[in-house]
Image 1: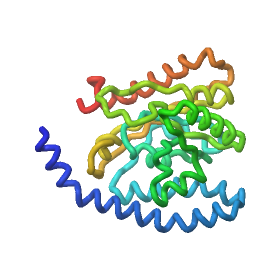
Image 2: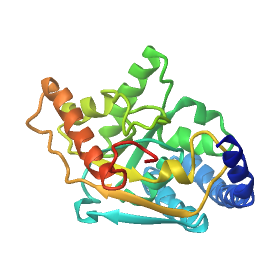
Image 3: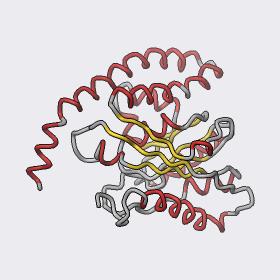
Length: 256
């Protein structure tokens, strides 16, 4: 089995190099534009800058040969402020989320990304980073997200925190996204991504073309909820994601 995996890595290496080249070229074009916008400190420009990744992500996925199939897209409400969450099995999830969410949105990402050249600069000025294993930094990121919500921005958060590399559908859900939704009375929208972990594994070199299924769920209204309902909201979200994942993995496990 190990030999087979190595051969697959080698076979898909040229395509992965192509994907890396596409991504690098897109960043090379976008970076000067984003720097000008950030340095301008023009609020209107900064607002519209948040929509640039949406179109660039769709272009990147198209160039990578990754087709998006969206189910129940009618639940998308571009003009409404929401908290979006999803399952998390791949770095590809962030690109897919950026490609499908049409709202004025910010993302919560791990602090390590800020150290990446070019991309780190862009993310630092448009999104919120968190050092997950640092309690003080998690509190700081929650405060920053609360402040950003006051601007009318939506947020996309992966409540699992880091990529799930197990065969289980879901790992532990951190409470941050659900707390924000309840505190601000914002609808919570669970998104379920299918196949991202196969097309771009968390550990491994290969990126391969294929189809990613994205399931939208009807927004879960939280205006009448309190923090006492936090666990209930988590369970509702997990149940929705499992329901969608079971359509593709009837055994209840990834890869089966």
